[in-house]
Image (cartoon, helix red, strand yellow):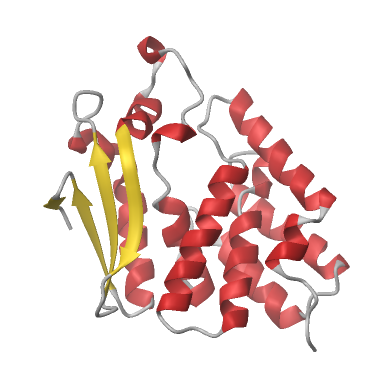
Length: 222
């Protein structure tokens, strides 16, 4: 059965948009970096770029975008186990929109497995979401305007002046390219908080039959 549920349709759904806003507000109250529309839309763009470049069919790409924009709604309940909470919430929302069961399974599996503490790539959609989510590191995600009170997450994100994800011309590697101001945060600090995320990106890339590489300030790290 064909589905009317598209990325554009989801973005125009006021209930889902409210869950995204409220989830981000909850994280703001807890002192976390930005997890609102800028984040989820960037994750959607990255995940769709990866799958489309690697030749996956358009509907698979579309489902990855849907999973990406909804992946953090569980934070409205609690940061702990937000991936699993979000998957359950997404099931109800998408089921009410009459999305076919096989597509719902793909979306909620991806949402439920995007967190580095509990997640694993299970299919191309979940793998692409993992990479899109874990590579979104940038200065504009930092809400705190007082540099003197930065914690390590603020400091590392603020230090990233530029970040991009690309696929090599031979389609054998996904590359995360970062420019980090080492006067603000060291490369070591980056790995102190992001090592588990980068390892999960590597597993996700391997699931897609490509390598995962990192370039920081022009130097190949992975």
